[in-house]
Length: 268
Image (tube, rainbow, N blue to C red):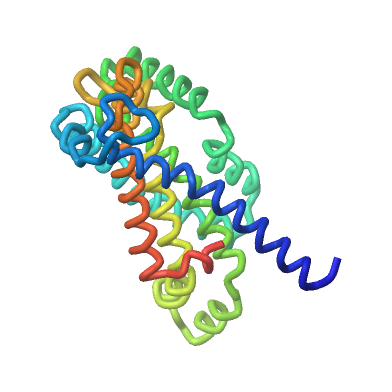
């Protein structure tokens, strides 16, 4: 295979992969404007009524707000816990470090439905022992989503810290800089892209979570993902496409804002 044909092959393969990823999203966005009463092809016309209908339904509006609140809590909480934990895992050697790392990353590999059921049973045990309601309450949902988000922060921040040049910290320490000064003035600026990427992926992981939320939402409270599933049980129109388009717009906006302040490619 010549160099020209090899380049052409890779370009075609890349275009096919990108098309495979982007095409379903484009179809969802396109179908959100269909005027058809039942979602079908070809479109009979175009309208914005489905967006108005989605916003007028309490389950979608309230679900969106709850999902945003939960994802924001999970993102901030994962940074507050994950960055110090990553620093300790990457910079210090202690007995059981690999075990701690595997435990912190376990939520990424455990199936969501299994994790949700385990958390629910754990919450029930807490309620039996303390008479404090956790399952079905907002704090229980927030903590579960923090568990979803934390592994992303641990993974990305630890990777950035492992690649950090330790001689910079040693030089600062030899000049009399304290540990806090070294972290905030030297380490933190270097790993900032990884921290921003961690916050983004933690937010998205929480925002799109369905399995754990199914077990933990309380009466009268539902996340956006659960509202979508409940609506699809009895309806098949472009309302869902409109809701999905809003989710795509939110995530795309976050990606653009994040890339404005940090190059995501530097975080991996």
